[in-house]
Image (tube, rainbow, N blue to C red; front, side, top):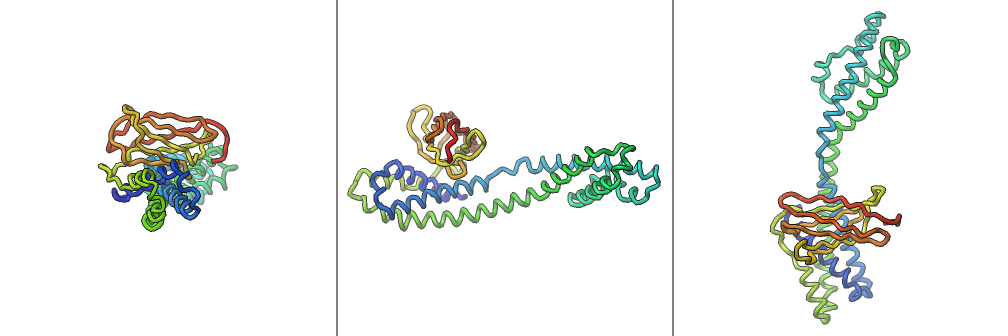
Length: 306
């Protein structure tokens, strides 16, 4: 997201948090309630799409190397056993199907290595009974099968990650367009009805003001889950300044249990996470731009549906 988009999302989240805190003022207005609910849902969806967009691809490359190394090792071991078997028995068909040195395997492209691995795997399966005396085992075959499947999946992982990121970017753009329309054309117009409530209306205008962040770096992202690892939506989050104890912002976790905060300057903060059925969690964290502080919070408590 651009800095302007981040600022707009932050404003929208702040505005909805303010309105939810003061819902007694407007909750009797059904059309306005529907608009606020739609904006709240849109905020949540954007946060979740951002989490998908920004999901780290770190580990994909390392995992791919490990999967390839394991596949090469299994192919080399089994092909040598089968070559030994073929040489002793004079089985030319087996010898031609499996002969491959470590250097040969290392030079193959990923897809070609998969092809060789599948050929060796099938030859091993077909000759297990006869080659058992030469050291071939079912465990070796199972290992090669598992490693080949893992390597095949890892070949596609970067492409799938990029595809997912592009899709998330498209969805963010669409959601931001809808968000802008709902706020500018619907929410602002509806709030005029409460202009006579001076204190409420002035606070709404303050919350509705777009604050331009001094940085485009995200200060903190948080993911909430229960003891089973399931995302916890609707966690009420209060972040305060660690030294002054001043409330900096209120948030509610998205459907996938995420929050993200941009407008926090460097310093120490405290986060209180509350939801009915769960024990209140308090977490201290530090914001140190340009790094993003990433927190995973486990909500302890009852087995309530999110």
